[in-house]
Image 1 (cartoon, rainbow, N blue to C red):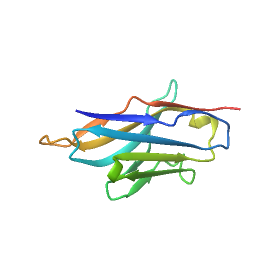
Image 2: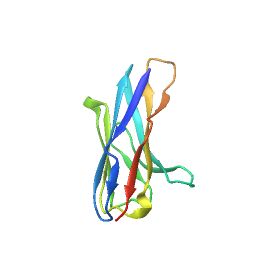
Image 3: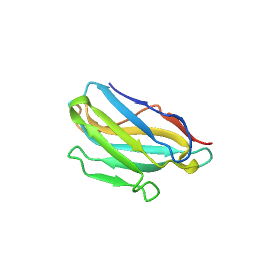
Length: 120
């Protein structure tokens, strides 16, 4: 089994910054694409940013220029640096990874989520 654990969420004022981490552990042969999602209360889950193993990134238009996704393959960890935070960034942020866990196919795993609240 593989576990993904997010950390770094909390309460921040508008214009502030937070850094989220997503640490993977367990039976991992390799971590492939990793993704941050968020879900605000009463809204559908949306993709925030994704990163391939080689470092190719993709961002939602709403966070381009403010958020930066990165990863440390040696530590099996992904990060999301969030700057210039806005109240509309308030949501539960979850990470997902496509994992080679020794099975026939890559398997998707999810973390439990971390709350980010942006408010004055």
